[in-house]
Image (cartoon, rainbow, N blue to C red; front, side, top):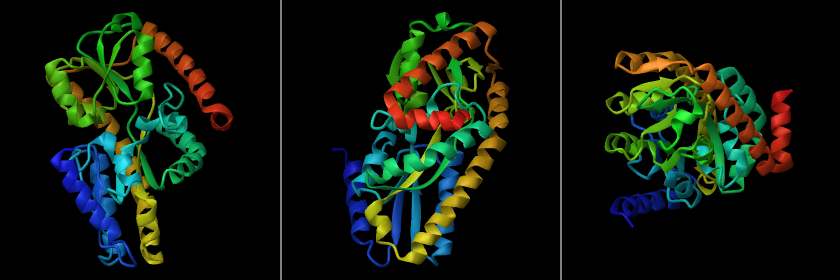
Length: 323
């Protein structure tokens, strides 16, 4: 076990053990850089909680995977190694297909549609998290997802053989359907993977592209607006239940504010990120008609696969969304 993980676990266990009537400090692991708006929003959430509880509950964020790596955060919170954390929920669709509903390609392709889908899906996702010893607090969307490449791509055929960074089941499936080679890479490792050729392309928002300065390795961004995945902040159930009523209310009230503020920031930054990519030399453009048609076919295949995998409950959610 890595020294960082050992120290983090020891510190967090002390925290959880001390969450009696008066919780004092919660360390909150986050996967993205401190400059990312999700991380900044998480830090603002922590300040809100501290102020609302008069310092009784102090949430300290640890960005960039510095406390736990992104793929370890959910498990750390489930097991009490950390009392609270943030995670891209679709990265855990292999545990429960409901976690991937926000990443079905071309199902919800705008902030308005994403909110509509989330309103339908959130209660079911909160219930699934509860069954895993987690308390849902809030979720914030990423801007619409687009493709990053190091060459011009005008059809799915142009993607064949490209090493494609995958971060969840949906992106790995896109790679497979497009004839690309999926490579599992966390956000904190993306820049190095691109620079060394471990990955040659990926799909993400403009935010990730700017965070990783992808123009140093890649040349093209296609604004296909595939989906708007969400990061979820959740608490360990035992740690949450150990809080007094006033602290619980402060936590949930601040969570509601964080959800609203985070989405407002995502909307404001969306166009700005694409401008930054273009200003640094990337070709930012919409997909060709052929590429759009090819991707639509992939989206139809993946929606059908998701509904089949999620069963009656998943179908009910999609039907409710499409009403």
